[in-house]
Image (cartoon, rainbow, N blue to C red; front, side):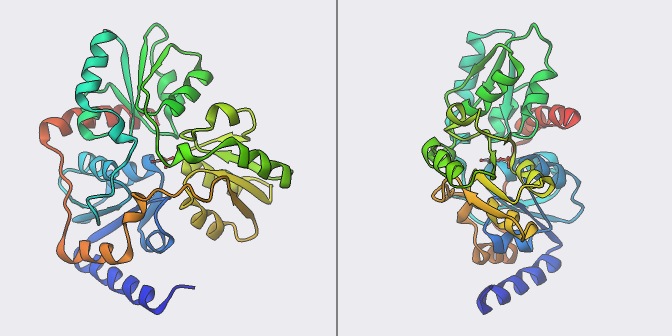
Length: 308
Ligand code: 13P
């Protein structure tokens, strides 16, 4: 049950949201209290699509930095805020724009498919973006004779390469939270809960070892949708633990076992009710993307949106 402080903070945030003509867009990994307050909760693709349609003056993005950049790119006339500037993404730090430029020189003519978990500058150097929910579809849309450079998540890239059987070069990047998810505890959970469905995010470090064990490999929204639709009563969930809030809330009659209870992203958890309140009160911290970068990054994002 929420404490009195949480209730009053939530009420103040709702008032401020109205006063500042703002909306809150939250990722599935945010703390439950923020998810419950948000106007939209979803995966990276859903957040970017929603942000593009927002009419209100202010978009407060509760997630990590690249998600706010995507909102600023897709809806440049709005004031895009984040509650904490330190909420970065380890995966997006895995590749710089200079590294991508150098890699492209080694593979002239290759198509660059860039995961949305990257900086705006890296997106601007890319041909098309993808998210965990559409990566396979995006790769399949590229002509067969083209080589593909996939950045920066090697596990998602590896999964897409296996599924599509395409010539894909992988960047050696990974998410520091998803690499903590190991196969042994999953094997144990599967032994203990034989009828549980095993749903896994493609960023998981144990992807190769667990691919054949997984019932489905899905984005965070995909996991939520599947859990609702499935007739199974128990699920093993391999991704960041923030997703359990929505899973439990939307399926009170089902049981969810985290594959790794320690898989918590400290950057996602930088956002709290307190700094959400301060953010709306002081209209801070604004995230902007320089126009020359935004124009090119928008093209890569819009090409993705057209296919998703
Ligand atoms: P989703 O797009 O599946 O929500 O994944 C985003 C992410 O950052 C996973 O670490």
